Each structure stands twice: as structure tokens, then as C-alpha cells.
Length: 127
Image 1 (spheres, rainbow, N blue to C red):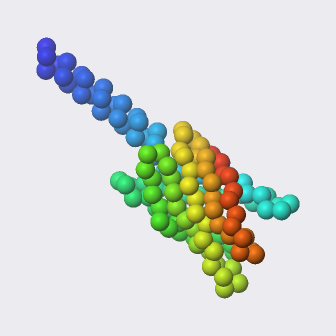
Image 2: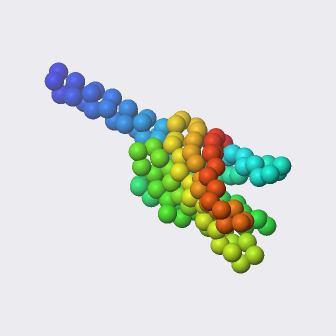
């Protein structure tokens, strides 16, 4: 009887752990909108978590794909940066957000065309 109880308890714990891990997996496609001036642009982020390694990419101008850099996922927080080049100038934007269910809520930090620091809120929904 004691061994049956241990087996059942072990299965329950394993099931709860698998559920918790699945709920905290940022893998998938995430979408949000960015407003610049009077224009709104749709943004799509694709993430893949394998073990403790987070990889992914974002589309850029002219149908290019820009890989994310310095990516991490720890304690429900997604962090990565994206470097893009325009007219010979490279700009890096750092993203940081908290995963909760099918939503990532965070901030991005980068520079505008005048070189001024810009911080923007972003809320991405899993699609």
C-alpha cells in the first residue's frame, strides 16, 4: 500500500511539474504593435526555448529576418536584444518582459534616430 501511494504521489508531482513548465515556456510566436509618430507597425517575435537556451528572431525591413541576441529566460522573465542596421548605423534595442500565460509584458530600451535614449512599453500576445 505504501509503495502504491508513493507511485501515485510521484505521478501527481510529475504532472504538476510538467504543467508548470509548459505554462512557463515562452516558445512560440508573439505579436504586438509599435507606434512611431502617427504610424503603427505590427511586430512578430518568434522564440524557442531548448533547455535553458532561448533563441529566436524578428522580421526586419525588406523581408529580412533578424536573430535575437543575448537571449535568456529565467524566473518567468524573457530578455533579449535586437541589432539592426539602417544607412550604415547599427542600433541595438534591449527587450525585457515578464511572461504570464499567453502574454509578455515588458519594456524595450534603445535609441531613436537622433541618438536619444528611448524606453517603450510592449505587451505581446501569443499567436
